[in-house]
Image (cartoon, rainbow, N blue to C red):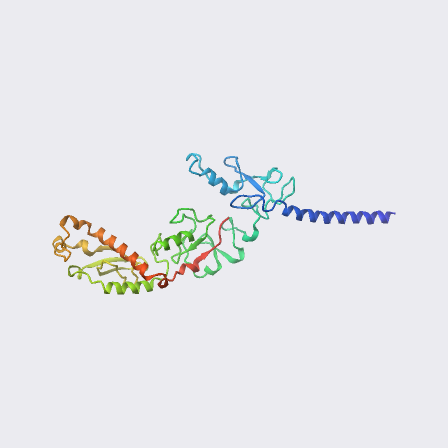
Length: 346
């Protein structure tokens, strides 16, 4: 009889273990996909340590507290690493930050990071925690490396080719002014090393802006467009009074300073043959009033001479925009396509 009892006892214990595994599996899926916000699918809420209010995630908190309707004196962001309490979405039990509810046992997030106090049921993002960044990112740890000088994670494809800039991601996007380091949008690295939102870069493209908004260097290979400008300048002779005018220019691409012949369309850098230049001094502004008045466009009176630089700038802007439209995209090869990655912060 003792043997039978021992056998029954062992059988009961085995059944209990099997039931426990099945129960844990069930709790892992319980409520999956039914809870969360527009930012994350998760089965818990967080209590903000700053204002003691409950939100699904830090983005929900920041959007609520920084909305235009909020008082400027009360606007603030949540200190994410200081979150200490979470509330289970299934049983409403408030507890310390952990992956499984202490009351009902449900998994509050398939992906859980105790350092970032972060929960997410959508593990298809391949989340991982970067120790150097101090935050969680998406895309798979094996596909990215952390650049210590740039202070952020880049795609492995950029390991040997990207240009390092100190804290390249620790600033606002130069177009929309959203902080880039923890943005949820796609980010791209320009050939010059500066970073910005990929969507903002697309908007620049739509407005025919092909230079970095930070350093003014070309963001793509413009050599074919420069050859078109060569032809345009050759077919657009300057009036006789301007044919011997010289102007000092600074090249935005190579940084060289040169003294070149003035032209209303554009100035070519003799060092790198780029037209991405700016005039620093010289040109028609340095001419005398008598020379201006004897220009073949002598309809301009003395009171209008001061407007000539502004007229030149306005004409050049319109001319260059129309030229780019005529040239078309087939002459422009955007190199930044190789510098885009989807290592988005979460």
